[in-house]
Image (cartoon, rainbow, N blue to C red; front, side, top):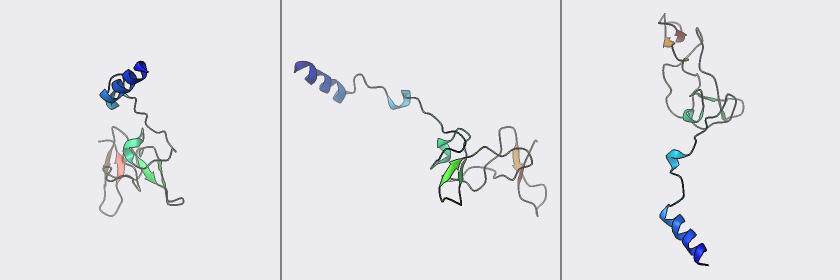
Length: 100
């Protein structure tokens, strides 16, 4: 009984429990369901218009249509991969990933 009380007192005091920041944070893989871009390893949670949900998607490659940055929880188009910049070469064309 005394051991059980000591265990409860230790748990209430926070002894023996890891800090939240010390716990591993696993990112989701491509095609996994998501609610926010921060959940995805790629950093892009893409809206799935067919199912109404969202899934983790790869970042845009060279010459692919892109968004310059991630805003909000989900995207309709992903930002560029590292090393590429999302720019428009012509005012009439959509933005695409390019090496600068």
